[in-house]
Image 1 (cartoon, rainbow, N blue to C red):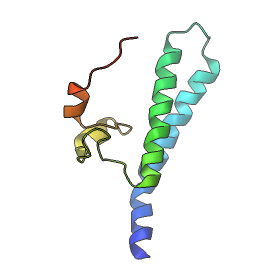
Image 2: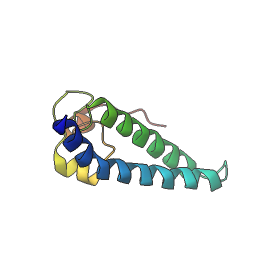
Image 3: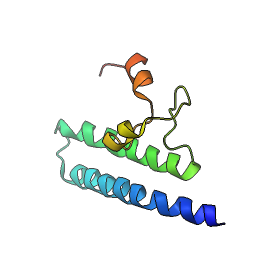
Image 4: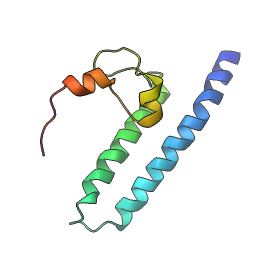
Length: 97
């Protein structure tokens, strides 16, 4: 039981930061014109943050979705919604759109 309390208390600041960033992107989406090129950025960012919050709830936050290895803390500090380690990010082909 104490582990659960400690785990929640260490996740609380991260959750709050992710939720604040999500709210910011959603507020931008609310005022973006449909033709605004930034709308895609805000949609992708909001989706990534929702996914990070889901991983946090499932206990898989900080693990690479591709290889399963831990994502280094420095990467998560820079990109808290990161779902892959830098190696997998660099080696996974992306769709150009």
